[in-house]
Length: 212
Image (tube, rainbow, N blue to C red; front, side, top):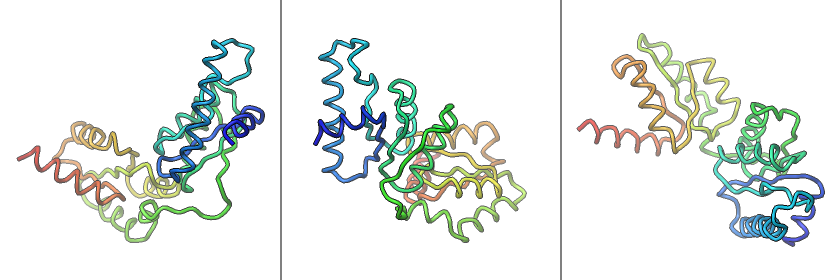
C-alpha cells in the first residue's frame, strides 16, 4: 500500500496535507509514505536524476502549517495539485495560502463532496456571534476582533465587514493580543476573541494572573 501510494503521488505530482485529528490508522499510512520517500532520497544520495521529489509529498500538521507545507510542495516538489484531508475550512485555508504565495491555479481537492463541518468553526457563523461583534463595534471604544484561524473564509470576511479583524493561531494568540494592546493602548482597546471559548477563558485566567 505504501509503495503504491507513493508511486501514484510521484506519477501524478500530487501532494497530501492532513490534519493531526485524522484517523490514527490513516496517519500511520501517511507517515509510512513520508518515511519511504525520505529513505529513497537518502539512498539516491540526492542525485538530481533519481526522480524522487526533494520535499515530502505527505504532511500531517495543524491547520496553518498544512497551507505552508502545501506551498513547499509546490515550490520544491513541483506538484500539480493538493489533496486536503480535514474539515471544509481547512481546504479553504490551504487554497487561500497557496493563492497568496503565487499558486492560485493549484487545485485543492477534498476527501468527499459531502459537508465536513466543525462545531467550533460553525459557532462563529450564527447570528448571535455577529450580534456580539456588532455590539462591540457600536461602542465608543476602539474594538478589535481576534478570530481563531480554524474558521471559514466566510466567517472571516463577514467579521471584517463588521469590526476590524485579524486571524490568530493557538500558538500566537497571546502575542497577537498583547501586541495589539501595546500598540493601541490597553485602556483604549476592547478585544473580542472567538469563537474558542475554552481558549478565551484560559487567556483571561492567564492575563488576570499576570496582572495580579
